[in-house]
Image (cartoon, rainbow, N blue to C red):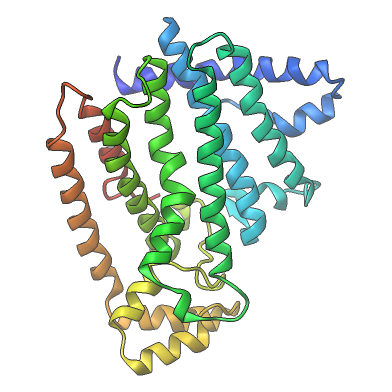
Length: 321
């Protein structure tokens, strides 16, 4: 099945899961208004494909849970070209509870569709483990960005921890690990270790791309207004800037980074331009993609199909959103 057919199969399955969720909510005497909050109007074979599709939607729900909460914590005005959920008129801080319900729905769907599977507990524990990892990454992300700017907290080690746990595990490793489970692979199968060895660094690279697009991306393409400078985030860009800037430029960053005014943001951007941070990123990007490509070429196909990882890398290579 080609990628377009797979995508169509995936998206067309959603109404069936939506019906499962609606019926489940009705069993708890939810009103139509309550259901509409969790499932606003959306346009969103064989047994193995159906299982993969259901779990794929569970991953999408997991991401929705994370993003609704993340936008509140970052006070982000936009998400995918639209107002963040908590910024939507009539929603506000109720979005916090909405995010909890989205998370709970994941486990209710897994129970409904996989309760009799031999790997049921493995599915549940994998989602719980990845959720915990993501929340740890979010905690470090937030605690390295206090109101008071402290550039000493901005290190590549902290950044790698944040993005590894906040993004890499759930966005890259989780979907592949789930596919291994429904193919009845034992958790000690070396395929899991290979997947983690390649996909976690790929997820780190993906987040570095996000850091770059936060500042240099076209909002009409990314659908999100970048806020890393004013939010005092431990971004890859500021870390690299601090590595190569002069003492005078470091003083400028320290004075203006983490401040909300457009003039402060512009001054930090000016320093980035002075040290040609775009070129630093482009060199890093080329080197990273080459390294990942070589890792994939060295995979033993008798253990796992290298195409799994080639598809991932192709999707994020030189991405603009």
